[in-house]
Amino acid sequence: MNAVSLKIISFFNQAGGTGKTTLTQNLGYQLAQRRHRVLLVDIDPQASLTAFMGLEPFDLKKTIADSLLKDAPLPLHQNLHDVDLVPSNILLSAVEVQLHSVIAREWRLKQTLLTVQDSYDFVLIDCPPTLGIFSILSLVASTHEPIPLI
Ligand SMILES: Nc1ncnc2c1ncn2[C@@H]1O[C@H](COP(=O)(O)OP(=O)(O)OP(=O)(O)O)[C@@H](O)[C@H]1O
Ligand SMILES: [Mg+2]
Image (cartoon, rainbow, N blue to C red):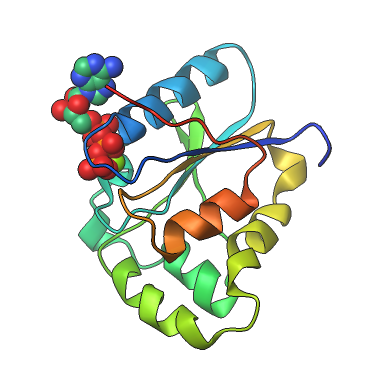
């Protein structure tokens, strides 16, 4: 699968509790059952998706924060219920301030996702319930942006 057919989908709503994380997880699982290669990306410092997928956020040494700030390779947790996950934890919240002075910061997530574009058919991004930098990074990186409402 190449960059043209890769779908990067951000689940975004600035309101809290609208089903973003639940939908990211469940759609990812369903796509994987249909033999698509799926990467889930948790870009919410609340780390709900990371916890939903069975990881303990506080125990993680590497998260999406390292890739956004330091160009570290994406910390891929592979084959969790047939999908891969890039996790988050509460330390991501500090990145918001640190990214403030980075040139072209809006492209940081897109750039890091392009490094794994040949490995996946779908990248599903779980956004936080804010209009801050993490949602902007996600929306810039995305090919599709559904807005969950419940
Ligand atoms: N389709 C649905 N119907 C009813 N309840 C749902 C549905 N999807 C999720 N929920 C419930 O709604 C609550 C919030 O879901 P979820 O955590 O996915 O929302 P969220 O938008 O990611 O929240 P946040 O904005 O805090 O990140 C949870 O208790 C979840 O079980
Ligand atoms: Mg959520």
